[in-house]
Image 1 (cartoon, rainbow, N blue to C red):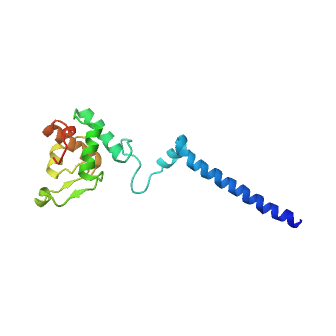
Image 2: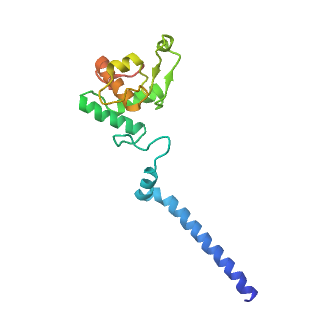
Length: 165
């Protein structure tokens, strides 16, 4: 093979590799824009070892899913509240951290710190626990649902709570 022919093959391979890289990059950028449901479904269905991707009821295992699952339970039990009311209070109370615990306020000074997404104390959680939810105060759905049950009894709805309660 002549020297000129030997140089063409690597150049063509470089061009092919460059086109493949550009095409792959464009596809990666375009997938979110065109709504590649197959790709996102594959990623979403792969559970991690520490956190499942959905709750036992099939809701996403994240703040949105916990609120939606709580609202479904609340609806069955006729506990008033809206997504926006719950979300607003969760963000204010715990920034969306289901493991949040307040170790500095007056409740903590009495030995009963506020816990979970909506910063509920143990006696309130036990009193307003909703049947069908976990007895774990740190369980996001149980915490939200019990807190909303308490807020309904005390304020008419979680929607009426605009500060510490």
